[in-house]
Image (tube, rainbow, N blue to C red; front, side):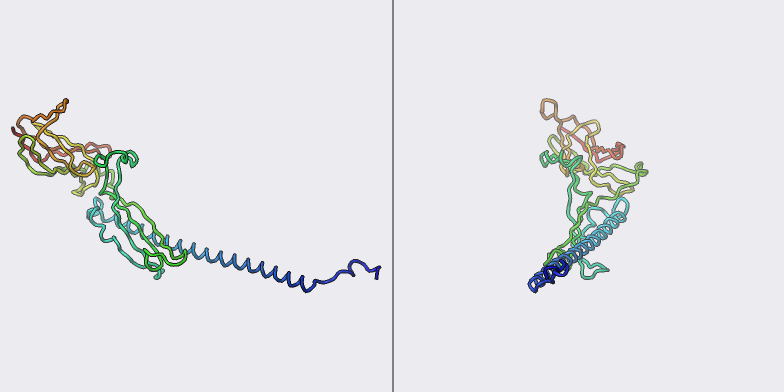
Length: 281
């Protein structure tokens, strides 16, 4: 027996070793199965959220195209009063009836020329545009778009964008007109009249949030006091003027009108006529 080769002395696994090996293999398969299951689970979550994002993007594009075609000055509807149609509108996706969407339209104010520059000013002095832009959010989820279900795949997807008033063809610049509306007035010292409101229009349709600078023109002068939004489109006229030392001086009797000037695409535009304002002692 001492002369047997090493190959003859080899032996099989013992029962204990076989059981340990089986448990090792079983553990390995369990880990692989769990990893595969987790991968499939997260893949389904990703697919679900991508599908919701696609639905939300499609709805935003639909709203953007609707706005571009129906709102002034391209379309016939006023930009700042046609949005209630979309506010809180809900529906289901045609291809995925279990998925619901909901639209929210929010008021959004822009500062000009820069958010950071204007934010440091007192609120009353900020140059702001509050009419020409809306913030639109689309919520998409399984079931109620505003509620979260159990699990990551049932959390709502929310996409938001800013939609502005449709732009005008630059070739139409020559058709723009400034007009001023307000009362015909007869003012004594310290008396005021207004409001006088300026509008920039093309084809009779208003361009929103245009910034105006005011003055009074005629054979008498008065003080223009801004009384409206941060674009300066609305003012009052007061029968007094300021001299360099700060004192109030009442002008000689005469007639003037409130004149609004704006710049649009490099052109300086001013209203040719306006309501007559008579000043007297």
